Image (cartoon, rainbow, N blue to C red; front, top):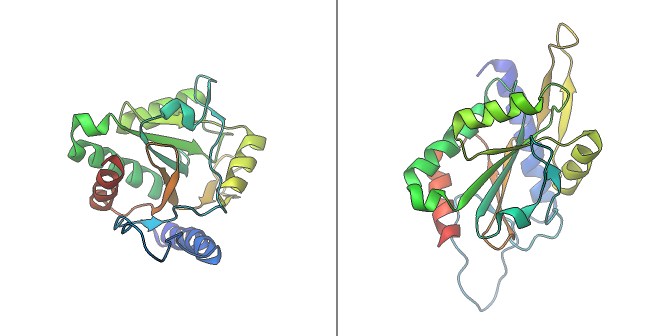
Length: 208
């Protein structure tokens, strides 16, 4: 990771985490009741400041929402195919996590990759990109209006950073993923680039 990309990663990660903290942090409920699961990632169960669903087209143009993945744990991450470090690292870690979970459990997890760069990320490029990490991964390609809406709903930051040529730009974006349980309830805010172990731990808890 270059110094420049590290700085951007730190900034976008900080923005994302600061957003969650500003909204009251986790949604843990105090008092009598069952002890909540001990997740490795940030538990935002019950936090109403985030979106509870989405409706975005996949690379074939079919609209997708949480209802399409009923009974599965859904990991929704934002990124783009030209990302030099964080995005491919997180996708590789998720692929490793599914391998470690085993085939039966892995079938009950769906990874969704939402591009923040629909200008360059064509359906073909997106499809090939995510399937290179795992053939079950699904890419979602919103148009500009849909991207603005889902980013607003989930408090995702993204911005184009000009490069040396008009086509040679990068995208700053929130370096985090959102995890929904098998009932479609938003449960976790997960840092990107954290390694496979926390993913395996938390996915097991949600699958159980």
